[in-house]
Amino acid sequence: MSNFLIEGGVKLRGKVNIGGFKNAALAIIPSAILCKEKCIIENVPAIEDVNVFKEILSNVGAKVVMLDETTMEIDSSAVKEISMSQFSPKNIRASYYMWGVGLGRFKKVTTPFPGGCNIGARKFDYHIKGFEALGAKVEVFGDQTISFSAEKLIGNRIYLDFASVGATINIMLAAVYAEGRTTIENAAKEPHIVDTANFLNAMGADIKGAGTDVIRINGVSELRGCTYSVIPDQIEAGTYMLAAAATKGDIIIDGIIPKHLEPITAKLEEMGMRIEEYGDSLRVFYEKELEPVNIKTLPYPGFPTDLQQPMAVLLSSLNGDSIIEESVFESRFNYVDELRKMGADIDVNDRIAKIRGKGYLTGASVNAADLRAGAALIIAGLVAKGVTEINEIHHIDRGYENIENKFMNLGARIKRVI
Image (cartoon, rainbow, N blue to C red; front, side):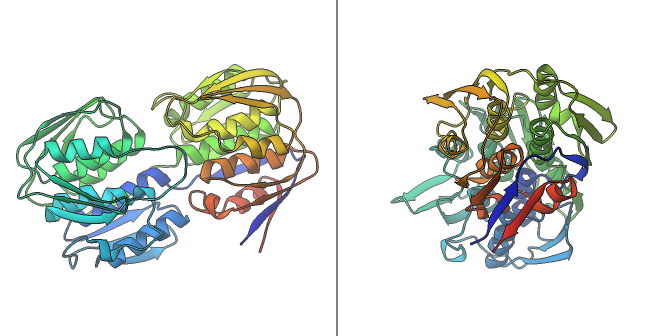
């Protein structure tokens, strides 16, 4: 197992290029199975979760070829079914998109329950409700396997009690081949939902309203191959923005969509950071002592839950008190014990963390409990006095491409030790 060794105390400076959005790629890649022709997907992030999905698609019979480091060609003409026997124990949370794909194209799919980061229950009730509304029968076998089947899918009005990103995308995937119109009300609005809908439309789907709380899908009889580029990763970009603030740095974040970063930009400016926009890039730089702020995570366009851990590090490194309220996932403070090893003073009560910033952190040996917690610990190591060792970094590799090289190019003293 590899780990990271980080020597803190360096102010980050320079430029970092942002890769394709992990959350969008993990929805778009399986969506290509809906089409019997070749699809070329550009700006695919070089991360471990994409490698796992390449394996899943290959196991179901698709031909997956990397034309270069970030361009994937998928030929699913030979795929005949999606069944339990085709999945490996490494399946990831986003493997549930194979449900919508399997229902849409084959009207039947059987898979293991998905894995992923341990950040709460994240039940599948909304997915199941949506599929049943389209006419699917659902069977659950213990806590290991789930199956969906239908003679045919019929468009319907579906109201989501919670604006679930995964359920919104999954219902879209199944509904593209449903007869008539499907309407998703209280749909999630995240940018990767829009990106997935745009990809499906590029293949010939008829989807309107993605990015709003009402999405309408008119069923079609077939989809065709296309070439499509994944949007930039707003969470990766936000991670570097918070790292710049924590290290009192000055960096340019390039290859982004600034609008997707407005919730992070607003909070950093409230704290006292300077942010300048240049088309598809942002300059994030420190000018004066930062002030603590309170944060509440919310679905897009609110402050993203995937950045509350790095924000907790930033707030812990300041002088003063702040509060983070986690309203999306119920178990997303499992990294706090690791930050306490570095001197952070954080009290957690249910979904609220009270942070008493002391103005410093101290290097320690810590474990990355999940993907975003791992990224937060890297930032903690960058600002801490002394050396920080981060273990279990395979979690970080799941969602950040070349993260140590990108930080080294900004001046960070970080190295991967095998």
